[in-house]
Image 1 (cartoon, rainbow, N blue to C red):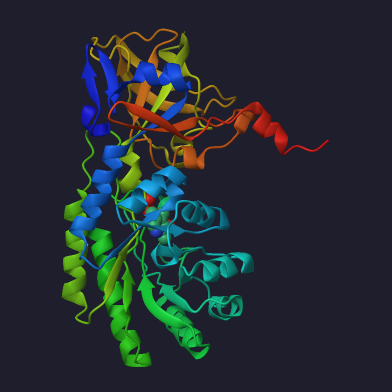
Image 2 (image 1 turned 180 degrees about the horizontal axis):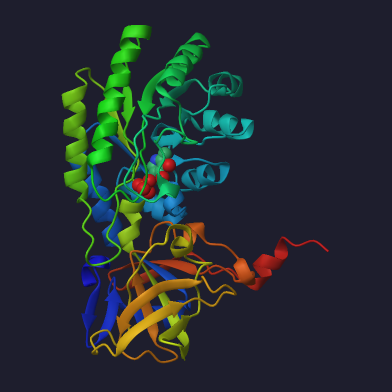
Length: 416
Ligand SMILES: Cc1ncc(COP(=O)(O)O)c(C=O)c1O
């Protein structure tokens, strides 16, 4: 199970450490819940993308996975830009020093303010609605690409499928042809075309199919509009293992398969863009929780943690499954199966339905791997719970990259 943890994770004398620091030391210093990110894992994964993609390709981080200035700065050091879809995400990317030529601006319903900000930042704007060429032009956008919905059903949870017929994202081939024509008539440089089939993809098949359909679209656009893309954005989506029995493709395997397929299907030169989110930061994150109440209810033994759906709503959103270990007694023999409940006022606030652990006691530390993406970034303040801190660890050092919220933070936006 240690393979689900960041690459610096070790268990020595029963105790889990990450980045050269024990879970107990991190929890004592920063409190719990705490999302611990391993710097080395993020760098390794960014380098894997850069190495597998063609040299001139642009890799941009899907900021939605976890908007965090320090992490994005680290990714920027590895040559990775940002895919943003709101004013907020753009602000994070800019605070991390990511230049306009490494920014892609997405969104199925961009506001005029967002279009103006994207234009001002010099981001590449993904046109995503029939009236967007006109609106983008009015907002000052001069360079864009069109987001194609190829009609591919990705093998993933329906909430994170994005390129099927009836998707709210992108444009059908007919509408995408019209958008290119409209945008070019307005004087926008339509530099490219984009597809993104979904997230947490555990195989490449549907991504490869989308590459074929994208190439077919390019051939149609060349025939009908004499237009060929200078940029081709193949989106993100590569999945990560959450449990020991899961084995999605490795980064290099997935990227090579996509790139080869693209070159086989489209003979004209084009610069590639890739937009990974989860597969960059997901495996780098471990969440530490303190165990509180342990009790039996019917045939189930609950171990309750000091967080839950407010710091990781993926189990509720997607039926996501996790595993965990006791970070302070990792190698002790298991005593049975436990249900890990959160502290929120919902019976559905269960982080893990069933995990084998040594007998947990109040005060033990639970470490949940693969929690770097779509966890804290999707968190809430449900039950008036302040969101946890995030720290970055490397070589025995830790630094806070997002401070823990306080109840005062929550009260600050209230008015009498
Ligand atoms: C357009 C786009 N690009 C990239 C991503 C990142 O996806 P993932 O985190 O699965 O790599 C998403 C998220 O679904 C997205 O909508």
